[in-house]
Structures are given as structure tokens and as C-alpha cells.
Image (tube, rainbow, N blue to C red; front, side, top):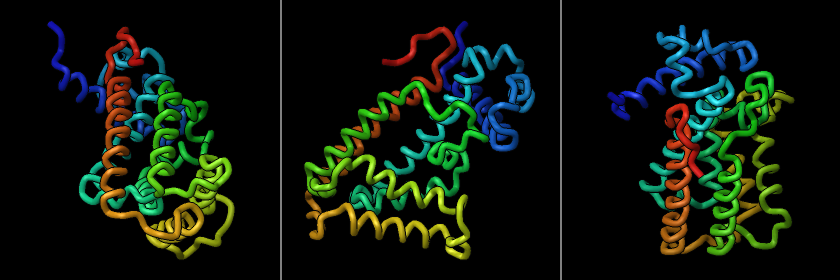
Length: 234
């Protein structure tokens, strides 16, 4: 008899939790499936029931971390649609990432920790959602429409805040909140129009972004918790 989906997902989460502990401690290259099985208290065969390869397992782990980040952002948007305004959105992303070393490594391209895991199976869909997000922001006037190569410029401006501590001690003594405030200031001054958006515009924009995120989360969840041998979601 087939296992209940909730039981299967619970076992998968236990395996992913174990993989996350070992990845943070040892790095991708040193962790084996046997290590993960032992940490999770299951057999190696059980791990392979969920993911055929070590690489797929760790892709699932990182997608789960991204899924949880997206769910956290959705909760903020549901509570206050104004969180969709770019400087507030980027501030929230930064603070969430500060408490999640795996997401931080993913954003900064930490190959020592992640090995070759920087690219994941749903990367093309991520790109589509990002393009949709930026179009929504510019069409509704929450981002300026006169910035050349907007995606590159926005990411380059934010990325420095994630990388600074690896290259300089300039941020010593600053709290994560203070760093997030500085990032929000840059985004507000450089990327947003001078006039704040109307509450109605903010609410409509938030609704569009929420829908896009929910679709992405659904795809993430389907890929993470699929059983070995099932087709990957389109």
C-alpha cells in the first residue's frame, strides 16, 4: 500500500534537515549519502526513494530553503501589502538571509560550501518570475523605468551588502538591522521614483506579486517532494 503523502513529506523533511546540518558543517564535497542517512536515522535506500542522486537531494534542500524564504515574504505581504515596495522588500530579504547560512551561501556563490550547486533544476522558472516581478514593479511605477539593465544594476547594488563582510571590516559593529536599513536607503534613493505610490497601487501590486510567488512555491514544493521515478514538474 502506498504511503500517505504527509508521511512521505515528513520523512523527506527529516532527510533534508540532516543534509542541511552536514552541508553547513562539512561542505558539499565531503558529505555522502551514507552520512545523511545516518544523521537522519534511515537507510541509504530510503534516501534514494526520494532523490536519485546526491546532487538532486541537495538541490531539493536549497529549493526548500528558498521556498521557506518565499513563504516568509508572503506572510509579510499578507500582513502589510506595503512590504512589496522595493526598498522594504529588499530589506526583508536581506534580514531573512542573514539568519539562513545556506541561502547566504547561495546568494554569494560560496563554492566551498555548495560545490556545484549554484544552478538548480527550476532556474529557468526563477528567471521568468524575476522578469515578471520587475515588469510589474516598473509598469506600476514602484521602480524607475529609466535605469539601464535594471536586473543587473539592482542585483549588483544589493549583492555588495551580502559580500562586504567577506572582504572588509567596514561593517564591524553594525547590526543586521542597520545594514538592512542602509540597503533599503540605497534602493529607495536609486531605484524608486521620488513620489511614493498610492495605497491602491501598492495593494494591486502586492496582489500580483503574491500570485507569482504562490505559483513558484507550488512548483518548488512539487519538485522537492516528488517521489523517485515521478516526472519533474514542467
